[in-house]
Length: 421
Ligand code: GUN
Ligand code: ZN
Image 1: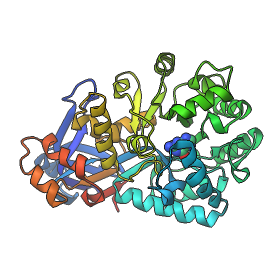
Image 2 (image 1 turned 30 degrees about the horizontal axis):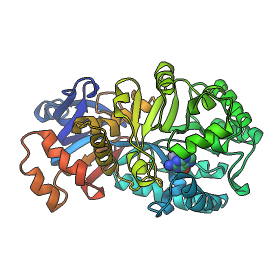
Image 3 (image 1 turned 180 degrees about the vertical axis):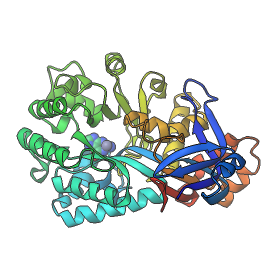
Image 4 (image 1 turned 90 degrees about the vertical axis):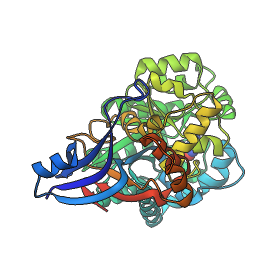
């Protein structure tokens, strides 16, 4: 049966970084068979679909669901761990927690906890890292499958500079990744992502093995970290004396092309920027993480030249909320002298992330033919937001207080593949 949802339906007719008037508001969206079938005026859609079941959301915003383009679901339980910068934070908090994922039951418990939190925050699709354990990928994909989600993940590969219990080898990383890819890639709405953690924890041999795997499965994504902290970059320089720069450690092993997703990408050289643009790579901005771990300020002007997604980076990031993440992106851009428009922030959290994941033909916007993953956002979810919104003279003035101050209390409903949760 078709569903007709009434509210303030937000879609994009283009990229707001190119055209700040690219957003569109409609009164209604028709959903059937898991897909968006039509958008338009309430009267016209009611008349054309008299049998549709109607759900009215009043003045709430109906948007494409949020897409978190870089998360570590295994770090759910260690979010908000105090006092460390990247390398110490990994050693003190992250690696001990990831060791616990040798127990598949624990992986399942945390995957389910993560999905429930993500959905409560209006995140309907996500691209996660696993741990080095293949069962961590099974746990994630089983949780996503049970909820009908479009979801991406891969086994994190590390063969050096990590505790013994978290090290694989070049060969086992290749074999395990390939077996998981063959098991899961393209099942339901699931996609496998080849996942070397980052150059400090992979030998050139392991990066080359994963480059070879990517060559065999070119339609997969490949995700890793790039130039997050200056100490990390100095370490990469020591570990790879023959490389021109950090990006070159990936490029030299076949890990730079369309479908590559680089998290953070803060301290880039001019060569790195131009190669990333030429290669058609995607960057993922993780602003709450970049401030929380003290990494630096991402250059959002890059969004004019390549695909940029937005992400929580749970648990280096300090929030599960893509609203809070948009707020942090706004604040970081302000510190760089750029005021991002609310329509740009919202687009980054939906279509920007979909484009980074090369899934914009499936998710990230409200348009006929796209999958019906939707979030309904109450624009007056707290007294502080409500009193600011009361003065709004246009939709973006009404949305911006929720971007800056909103959280899971603003999430009124979530629709996954045309079904309300
Ligand atoms: N670099 C390598 N691994 C990680 C991680 O788990 N989190 C963050 N923020 N950066 C990383
Ligand atoms: Zn990360």
